[in-house]
Length: 136
Ligand SMILES: [Zn+2]
Image (cartoon, rainbow, N blue to C red; front, side):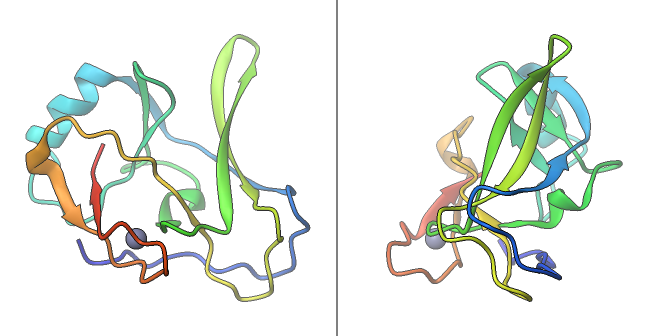
């Protein structure tokens, strides 16, 4: 997979500071799988984020800038799930060491594969890179 555009911070973020919400269409795992096998079959970039084992966010058509954040095996951000008014919401937070100005934001997608055939090469180039990631 070629890396997407990526997203850089315009300002400093303190450790654990909220950066932005990851918004998009909330869909079931079955719907997510169906879209991967049909609509998004030939897409190089995936804007699908796992909320939990049964729900996903599809930010392909509409979604916040958070969808442009690339994967890294050594990320500087993390995504956390919050329950607001009974509904799950995902937000991007700065990692333990904060974010510098113009630093590229990354988080670990924690790919859970639907099948082995979805495995792709990871190009994050970090020291602890596993070399392979799987689309979810
Ligand atoms: Zn990697």
